[in-house]
Image (cartoon, rainbow, N blue to C red; front, top):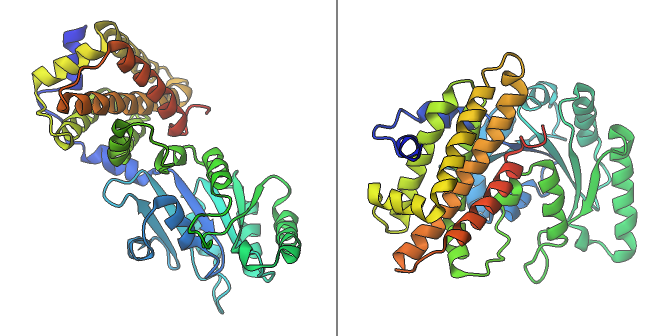
Length: 365
């Protein structure tokens, strides 16, 4: 069993993985932004990605006549932002754009400036979205709240929330946010991330919470989005019967090779064997059995193409992320000439597996 697992985690000849990555790019977890020009949508993206206004502005690509998408990160995207533009402009009917973009978005964020009560164009668009029943999760952001006097702020927020409630109903969250405070922080940032994580779980992995307790964790954060990219590709292709059996091991092998290079560790059979040895032989056997079992489930008529495939996708995401996480931990210590304990490796893998499955977005489906 161990020798077989070595073959498919570290195959001698990898198949062409371009189709796998392209499939993932077409099916990225997507956050749809709706709001008038100047409401703070681009600033919202900057806050989540840590990028500058220039980087965000240059990264948008048209996807309909007036809507644009932003993949993050650009080279190896983990998620996508959709921005419906032109709301409130004369002679613009967003119906066609909303129809097309609604097929792509997984969760909706409506951004309204707190002191701007005239939101008829946004409310009209929201009414169309509600009618189509394409979006289940909605977060209303009241932006630039600190520009208003405290005595006016609650009244402004209540007014805009009531406008949205009249169109959407009460099933949505609402949060007052300000992206431009005097000390450079973001007002209600932690609450914002918590709401977004509920809507789009991968955000919990994308956002840098800057809570690194060790140098090793700080180093991992620099490559975490790449690990997520590989994990996403593995999970997306695993939704198709027979594809994951070939592509998932090859994706993982490519990931390990890339990560080793970034840590200055030579990736060869010896390094691979030492990595697996550090995890323990029993882990390798369990890994192989789980992988084989979930692939077999995908061939069961009806069940395999629905529940089985979704469960496999969640597991592929989690296992690939877990493998990448422990590999980075091992490579870091290896580059420093420091030994790692098998227990620490196994604990780290289990924790990363759990986080990865939750971030995949498939676990509860």
